[in-house]
Length: 220
Image 1 (cartoon, rainbow, N blue to C red):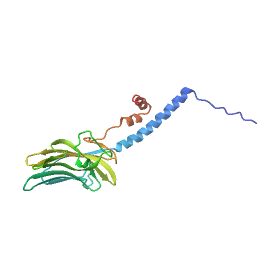
Image 2: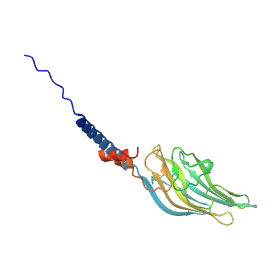
Image 3: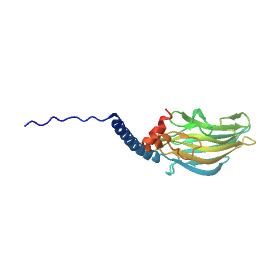
Image 4: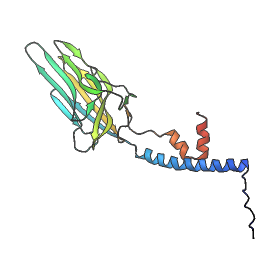
């Protein structure tokens, strides 16, 4: 007995488009949930402080509070028969770095990006001498940012210190540290002055599914 041949049932164009839209929306939701979960893990840890670093003083900074110093801000002052000099420096711990070039530490403005593309060989913040004048980017600055690269379990992280420096008479400098922060995601850049992470609008749109995808089309 012969069996009747099976007939293939074709889908209408409108139904096929609907199924494709549903599949795309489902994929977008899944991707959005995963991406949002990853974004939720990203976090900037900010520590507000108020510490004055005066003559011949130093302050150790532990950005991630693991009881290991990541760098030390040092204010060295001294005089000889001819002149007095105050030198402000940022000494990174082994394996870490301070943003700058040719040993000059940068005084960054709010909004500057601190990350893998920047140089990290800075050490000297400012020098003020009664005999030779001044040197460095940190002379008489208010709320400038020092970029920092440091290691957590062998992985590079980026952060910043916010400081103000005043040069007084007789080459005297007073430095005030008012806060510091770092990005918890390895190798992820941080913006100077940012104290919390930003929401990613694209990931949020993906999590909305088809309606979010429609909204994203407006920006293409």
